[in-house]
Image 1 (tube, rainbow, N blue to C red):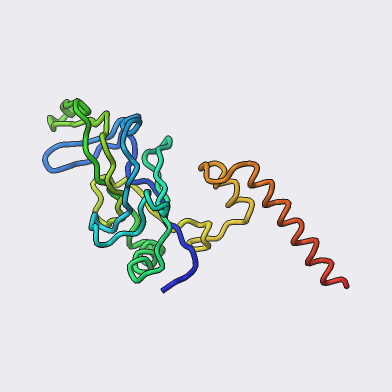
Image 2: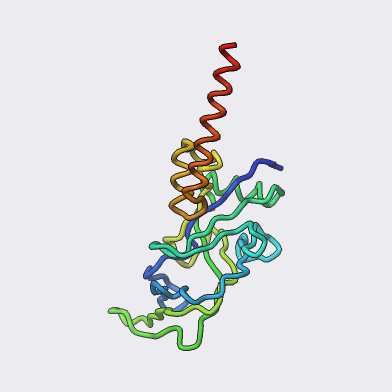
Length: 196
């Protein structure tokens, strides 16, 4: 079992993507999560609560909306399940997602596609229960990958990692400046130790 911190990130849903659910088509409208309860979302494998990878209420899972859909980032646990899922994602065997949710009252409306199939557009979600890594997603446009900041699936430079973290809101500009000062001090100390 790995002891190095590893992260999975991706999108558990994408806005306005039509996908088939049984005998109808479904899509999620932008803004549907604006008032959703996302205070205790679990990251799971195949919607199975006994295969939990992280949880927002414990701080091991971050979920937030962006221009694509519902973005998530989960710290992979140093367990057999964590190693299994991380390996399958890194190899590309697991590369898509799903999610569990409930719809708010009057939070959807129905229409018909040009070929006559019913279309449900979800406009308001009441609660998000989970994001899940799966090989059988309803929405094929979802995604998951090892976060490259961990060095799995391609390592980025420190500046690229910090820029990405600022963009996602996980690091403030002040913290970035402090890290740069610290890094510069470490390089100066190392140079002195070599030249003495």
